[in-house]
Length: 245
Image (cartoon, rainbow, N blue to C red; front, side):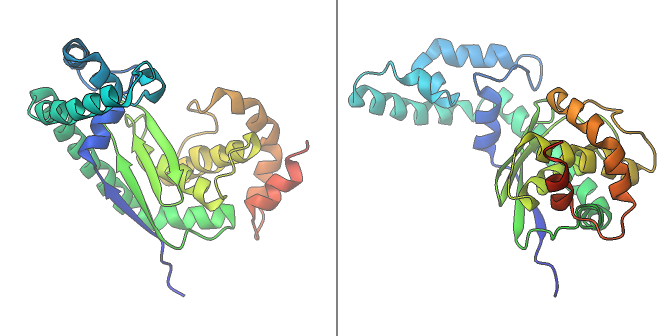
C-alpha cells in the first residue's frame, strides 16, 4: 500500500510575527527589531501584550468593554505594523528560509523517511504533516499536534533542518509521549544516528541536545548500539525494556 505520508511547508506571516514578538523571546531576528517592538509597546502597551501572546499579563484589563476596545486597537495596530519595513524584512527573510528548508528536505526526503522507518521499526504517519516556518535566527521546534510542526533554527551543521524535522516526526510516530526516556531515544535516533548516516560522518553527542537528557542517553548508549545491529527493530520495545533501568 502506498504511503500517505507527506511533508508540506507553510508560512503564516501572522504566526511568524507573533512568535517573534513573544515576550519570552530572547533573541532578535536582526538588529533593530527590539527598537521596533519597543515602539509598539510605547504606543499601546495593552495591545503589545495581546500581540505578544502573554495572555496572563492582560488580566489587569478589568472589564470586557476595555478588553474589547483593546482587541479592536490590536487589529488596527496590526494593519499599521504590516506596513513597517521591519515587518516586511522579517517575512521576506522567513520566506527565504522556507525555500531553503523545503529544498533541503526534498533532497533528503527519500533517505530520511527510509531511515525513520528502518531505525524506529514504526510506520510513518499516514497523513500530511505541515511544517510551519518561523525566522531562522529564533529557535523554534515543537510538534504542535499530529499534523503540525513549528520550525525555525540556524543551520548549525549540514542537513540540520532535515535531522530535526525527523526528530519532530518521531514525536508524532510515538504518539507524542514526552517522557524523558522517549525523548532521549528520539535524540539518539534522530539527532545522532540519522545525522551521522545522512552526513556520512560525525560522532554521537558531537552537538548539544537537551542537557537534562544526556545522562539517560549515555546510560542507554551501549544497549542502543546493540539495538542498531538487530534486523528487526522496534524503538517502543527498546524503550519498554529499558525504561526502568
